[in-house]
Amino acid sequence: MAKIKPSAHVSPQAKIYAGVEIGPYCIIGDDVEIGAGTVVGPYSLIQGHTTIGRECIITGYASIGGPPQDFKYKGEKTSLTIGEKNTIREFVTINRGTVHGGGVTTIGSHNLLMAYCHVAHDCNVGDHVVMGNLATLAGHVHVEDYVIVGGLSAAHQFTHIGAYAIIGGGSMISLDIIPYAKASGDRARIYGINTVGLKRNGFPDESIKAIGGAYKILFKQGLILKEALEVLRKEFPDSTEIARMVEFVKNSTRGLAR
Image 1 (cartoon, rainbow, N blue to C red):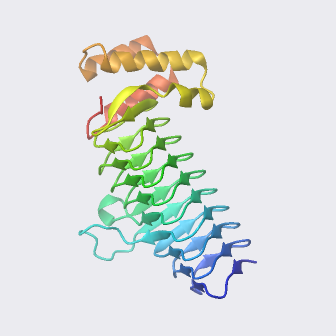
Image 2 (cartoon, rainbow, N blue to C red; image 1 turned 135 degrees about the vertical axis):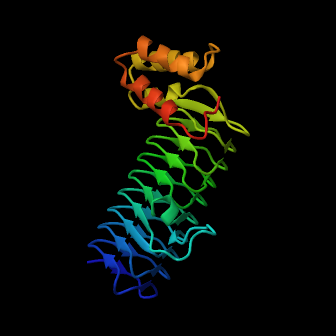
């Protein structure tokens, strides 16, 4: 059975699974689904068509599933999907999608969103992501797996942050950040590869060396991107890490931070 404090208001239409705990003065809307073992702390608001997976921890005062902050939104039925074992700290805000952006905001599993973070409409956040205090994603931002976004940072609409990248605190991200990179500043620039993060996540030395070499080819040899990508394909034909970098660059729409 779920444990629901008497002062909480939980819609009879909401789907609340076994082992869920809902704290004092929470409000849970009609179309909300909360997976088994999830804990919702006091004064949290969860609304809209929102699905939250198993064993998440929402510490309190969060606003999850609110309507998008977008003038184009006219009340259409859009959604928010959150995976399993996420920690969502106090005063975090996460908005539903818009019909213009696919209709859904998604957050994967095993993520940590620290206090006062904001995830706007139509964002796609992967797994094992850490967002520091007050980190903000504007609409349509894509954050891949194992990214760390430093506190007080903000990502511009439609930017794409590649897997295993680390963003320094207080950064303004206006262009795409390649996978495995270290980036910082206003506007954020690339300062090499995230060697420490790659080691912590079990990348072998050979792969880290290849990623460092690919970074130099992309940004330090004066090649245009088309030429650099051809060099990468020839130099590292069997590297899955370099293949990921190549695909990221090819699919970039905002342009790359350098």
